Amino acid sequence: MAVSSVLAILLDASCALASATFDKEFDITWGDGRGKIMNNGQLLTLGLDKVSGSGFQSKHEYLYGKIDMQLKLVPGNSAGTVTAYYLSSQGPTHDEIDFEFLGNVTGEPYTLHTNVFTQGQGQREQQFRLWFDPTNDFHTYSILWNPKHIIFMVDDMPIRDFRNLEGKGIAFPKNQPMRLYSSLWNADDWATQGGRVKTDWSHAPFSASYRGFKADACVVTAAGRPHCGASVGTDVAPGTGAAGEWYNQELDLTRQQRMRWVQRNYMIYNYCTDPKRVAQGVPAECSM
Image 1 (cartoon, one colour):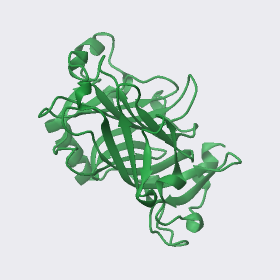
Image 2 (tube, rainbow, N blue to C red):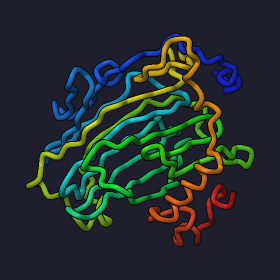
Image 3 (cartoon, rainbow, N blue to C red):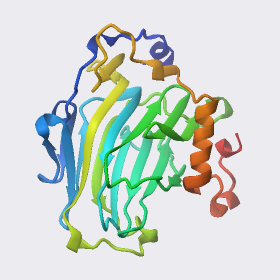
Image 4 (cartoon, one colour):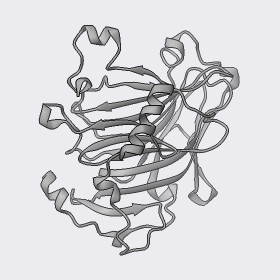
């Protein structure tokens, strides 16, 4: 469906769902029982042992939306493990919006890895430390994807804003519907200190937990058309029109300042300033 048609869709909250549960919104797709849905669908856990990790995906595809998920990451010695939480389409020219949580040895901080793929091209990594221990409690990790911005947020704090600069010749995800995926897997060849620290399987099984899923989004129907205002996992009453404010949302000055504060104090890698990348030519969006 043409983007102009998407933009013209009136937000209709008549399909709003209250208190969506994991069993209704997701399928556990791999892991041979290591992924579990519990507490009447309110909690999902993924497990990892030496044999296999596990993962799940959304039943729906989205073309723009604000996605919230509360995660509690693998505690203790999580070195070598990766908990991935991302939107993605399929195929060699896929689009993708990534959160990845790279584990570490006991007492050392997680690395939050973000990336954006457009038409199969990624390498737009930004990495952060977190200002809290993400294993002690649940925290909310959000992706706001609208026609102008992809904004990454942690507990409603913006940490990254990938803007639509198509007018400058830079591709932006806009045509390919994406599902929400998450997985817990072993990546000790690269995840912790460049692969120098390996997974200690004596601490297995490892476990990550999920709750509080919300998606105020344009959900793609069986006919392939996006239906906006389908507010999944919220208590928005049908017909209120409350869903959809995200569609034109941008960061105001205060939230831009908060994002810059996070980037100044907690960003540990930026593809735009990597000397090896800069030597090959700075990506166009970095100078804008």
